[in-house]
Image (cartoon, rainbow, N blue to C red):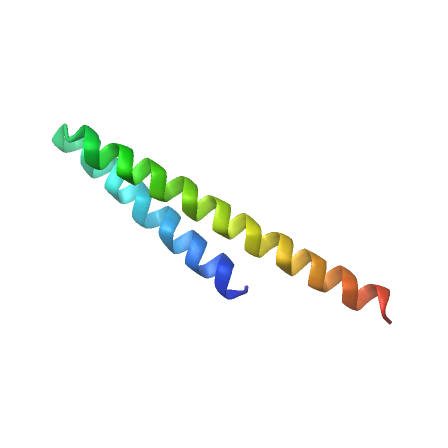
Length: 63
């Protein structure tokens, strides 16, 4: 795993916690911020996945 994957998945988890806390407390603002953070984390993790795949494919191609 690269740093983007780790950071992204951590943000995703943190966002999910905020989202659920917002739902349970009735705080729509916290819920929306949690959703935004969760989706931002997913995007960063996906970027890390793509970065890993490109690096792996490049190594295979140069062998």
